[in-house]
Image (cartoon, rainbow, N blue to C red; front, top):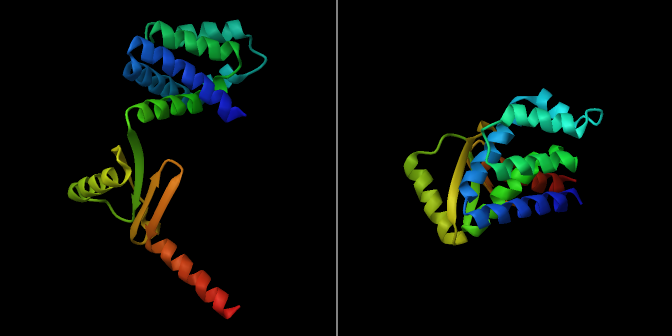
Length: 180
């Protein structure tokens, strides 16, 4: 249910952004708001607190974000306060980004390796993933030495695990099954 609510709010905001042809500007503003809320956990706690009136929360938002947001994004934030949905803001912002990426045929991919990838390997990986998915790829590369070797690729909810760690775990399970 919560996911549906986030999709509805993000979808409504995306439609406004699309109508105004300001999708990128809205995305940047959402990132800015998310950073403010993330960096100031006390501020988020105040916005979520049921004992503080919605008017006080909106007044606080006006003070914090004055002259830093478009009217549309600012009003959207106030609607979230009115509807007691501020806690869902990070997920709404993520869903907005997903809608924008889907409209532009962009897939965000996280590649996790045991050691850093060279720029040539990153470019080759992007090229291969673009050929497989038919989408433009935005690559986020993370290093996790516990993988031992290989690569773990995450595309949305899908995961391709070509790490040595997972192969060893699979081998361990196979051996355990034989012994048991």
